[in-house]
Image 1: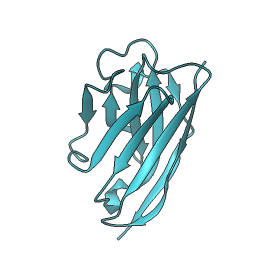
Image 2 (image 1 turned 90 degrees about the horizontal axis):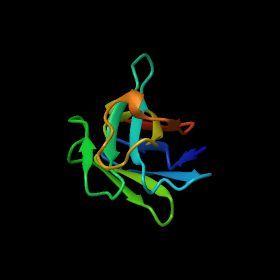
Image 3 (image 1 turned 90 degrees about the vertical axis):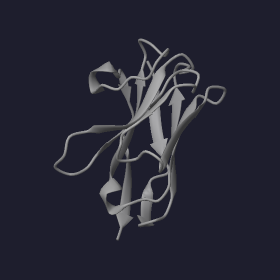
Image 4 (image 1 turned 135 degrees about the horizontal axis):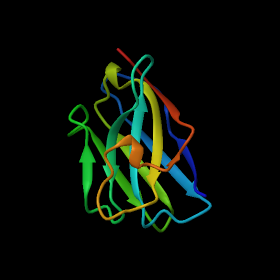
Length: 126
């Protein structure tokens, strides 16, 4: 069993930056594909960014390309999401997720993820 805990959310003005962290415990995630999702009120959960086991393959939603960066530190069992040039439409609860069945490539579908964190709120004011 993998336990994921997100941190780093908060309130920031438009144009600002936040760095989210996801700490895993219970099992090493070094061989897992990992992802960051978000869910805004009244909307479906959407994939923001994903990364393969080595960090050599990444995926970004078009809405965050060039602004967000996903990274991982397998030695520390963590994944991060650096968010720059934040916009009010980035406001959502952000979730870390792990695909425990594979890590060779990125996982881009909700159904591929096996473990989820509890989420951290990101609010961007205009």
